[in-house]
Image (cartoon, rainbow, N blue to C red; front, side):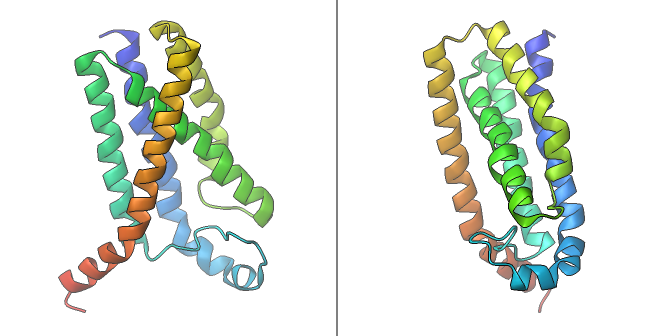
Length: 175
């Protein structure tokens, strides 16, 4: 097994560890900060569209499968453009979502601890992958743009069907 194969599998591991922090803390966090969230004047409140831990977990599971498939696809076909772009988008998400929300919210927001821990590692992984793969500047830009657009589409889609996940879970439980 070469070092790029090991690096590729770090992506789903980092993603899941980060999302475990969100899954574990989000309900308790919402309860703890309920008053602040209700009175806060932020334009985009953290986890404002959150329905339940169960439906959120379904979205996380789908993303995990997509990211794992991207890692497997990259290794099997020795093509790392999709993996690189999606990993870049996840790394950027640490900054654009968690750092910004935490600074604006002025309190702990689920996901910030792992974002802080994984941001330097993720940047190092992208740097190392760039050296190993020998990507040109054009390949890096195209991969990052495509990965970010794909990640955004996935994110929007999962949020649009999250209510359906919740309805299906209620239906399953006979509520």
